[in-house]
Length: 208
Image: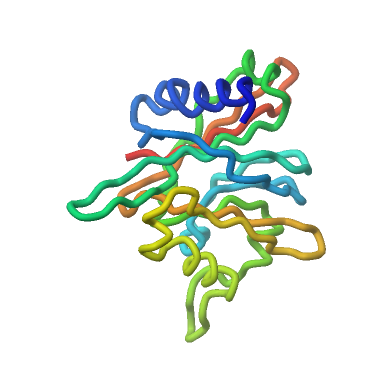
């Protein structure tokens, strides 16, 4: 990350996130560039696939390709450490246009997530159906591959353990999946807009 981006991400994902969530954010110990999200149809959400039927909170994002920065922390058990994502910062415009933007109040409720969550647009979400097993049918091969990739003991024990894969070959819409804290964790999200009302940045955060 450049110094300008680094400063922006740490501010948005750190003290600003704490302020916007009223101190409830799980918080991040460090940030990494996780890759780019390809937005094809303009609707973006971060959610656990099995819970996506109860995930009403999405964001209208202009079609394009956007960098995603992930904030993570180490969850230490008696004899192991697991690395899980707690925060996503997705700039939509240049950093200098985000600094003076106004942030909204976030979701009017919290959305449940569990163990891992996928960042995707509507095209990628539809391309990876079904998201849960029902009537004897399995989850899609794509979703099963995501789970096998990021939820093994080996994956959770190392940093940078997220997934980034193309879900819709025709459009290039991709899925970025991250291990998140287990059980009892909810998600909230915030939008920054400039004086003209244009979206400038997304902040998605897990809340204890």
